[in-house]
Length: 104
Image: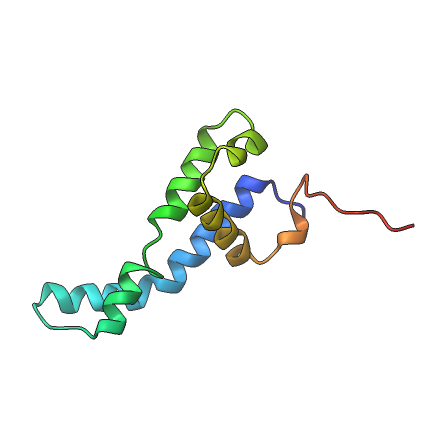
């Protein structure tokens, strides 16, 4: 099945959220109980587990009248977030409208 670009990004966001969910909830529970966490765990929460950039980029593209124009207006950080979402979705080659060079 061929997915539309936004559907791929939504799938990627869901995958990322599922990947971080258990560890993030565990660490947040420790912090809520006023227990300390390691600096590596703090860094993970601030970076890998923080999906705000991915969510924001997806919202910008959803609000755009055209996916390609919306993508062109993203800054480099948002474009990186889109790449992360596409990689997480795992099916980059199945996106409608992806340009492939024909070799005949």
